[in-house]
Image 1 (cartoon, rainbow, N blue to C red):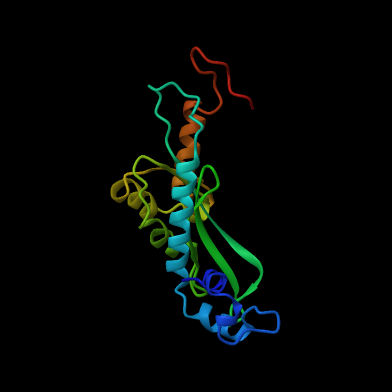
Image 2 (tube, one colour):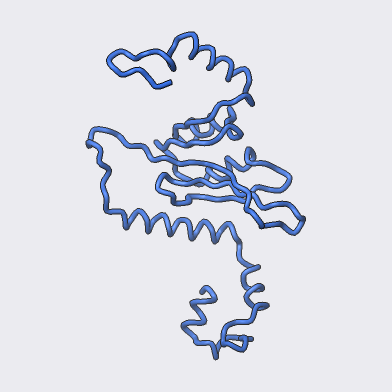
Length: 193
């Protein structure tokens, strides 16, 4: 039973080593929290929040029933400002978020690694079949695309920049050659420039 709930049920007099306010002293709380597996706790809370968000959702998508709407999942990494590890390195997290802002999964990126190696472990436990997963240029890797399509049954939308110079040049050349990005489309308005 989590500490705040157990104290509210048992009352502060039953708690071991409480402070002058009846609340637990700092040291027992730190000891209690240091024994918790952060990834397991995060997975449990994230799963519960996701199920609650899905259960409370009453709005229906304003799409015709024949039109298929795919779930969107964005993967992005961020450094936590002001958070520092024991070794002095900045804390960096890689997260997978649903289109409505619910965090599906989140992993701390190892100080001696980067987001590329954390991508697969982050998404591996998630059910992504039929979803569209988006990510930035750093995570645009052949292995990631193969993993999403072949193993997870998902689609992807990736940012392509100069970090894949051959593929970037090929795509850029085919767009300029065929005019797909610039020219008018039959039966549609021309794209803005």
